[in-house]
Length: 92
Image (cartoon, rainbow, N blue to C red):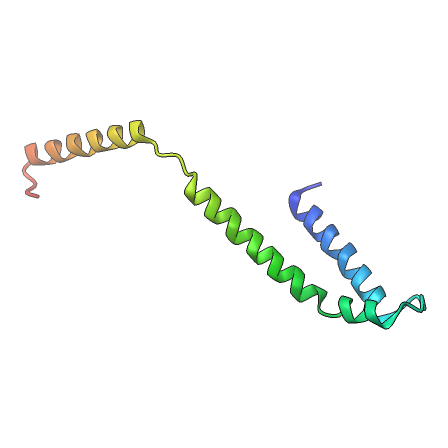
């Protein structure tokens, strides 16, 4: 199962449970307090998902590895390319 299908399945299960509790589709005779808590739940979950996503991106940016060797190699290649172009008559 792909990651997308896992997410779609999870959201579907949560959505079905939310609909059952909010609209009392199975006539479970749940207390009114349950419905009051369940009604705004999608908004709460969306906010939690947004916070999690923001924290994940922030963590990944903060712990991003520097590739100093690759940077040095790229700078050397740029210098070589500039020298080659100067030898061919291009002014920079």
